[in-house]
Image 1 (cartoon, rainbow, N blue to C red):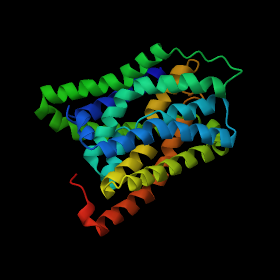
Image 2: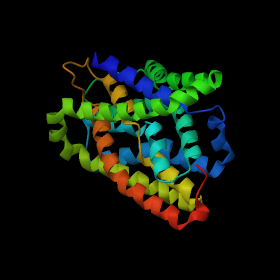
Image 3: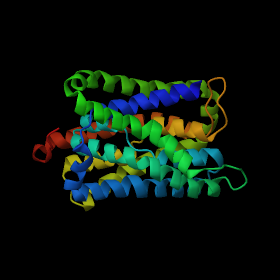
Amino acid sequence: MIELILSVGLAFIMLSLGLSLKPEDFTRAFRQPRALLAGALAQVIVLPIVAFILLRLFGLNGQLAVGVMILSCCPGGITSNVMTRLSRGDVALSISFTALASLFTAISLPLILGVTAPLFMPNQALEISILPLSLKVFSIATVPVLIGVWLKQKAPQFCGRVEPTASRLANLLFLLIVVGTLTSQWNVFTSNLSVIGPTLLSLNLLMLTIGLALGALLQLPTAQTTTLSIEAGFQNGTIGIVVGSLLGPALTQGELNSFSLPSAVYGVLMTVTILPFILWRRGLQSNNPATSEAN
């Protein structure tokens, strides 16, 4: 039952994202090649590599390690768009990143898991069929986005009225899923926090920093650098929780498996770290009004 609730919840979150998008959002980033290159490099390539290296450094293996790799393949989602706006970043660019990543995840996530899972679980049988998993991820994370975009094209006035409410509900639903996950597995969470907490916190802080460094290296405007950092360091934990539930045994008594736990823990940690980041970037934009982007 909980698997169904999680899948429906994720589908609604991604549908609400689609309601905020237009077809040109998928192509806007291509008109900003430096920002697109940096975003693709940070989110699709650097993030999984950094996660893999940290797991090796901290000596984390098994299902929790695979759960961290699942998280590293997830896009930012609608929450990253909200955080970008609060940080006075380039919201249009954030939406473009999210739109493209939501399409690419269905391919990249199963492929990366297919390579890394055997390394972290050499003595455990975990059959990852890339095509079936890709279809599942596509159906719950990508199809709802495409439906939302289609609805936006067919009924723009209606979608314009419901999109703000849907967006708020999606953010609330994301929070409820994370809190509900941790509440249902509080004992597991507290007993594993010392094990996965340092890895996840390091991953979050490193990716925020790498995003800033890439933006500076490519001489992107301040607002775009802020966006790049958030997209690199702020992952959609709901996708990670749902995908983790697809890999493990059937869920019982409202409990999630160890594949999903890292995404839930990360959802809490990144909320804590993003608050001072938002204040810092808002102050930076206020001190450099000429670099601000129209949002």
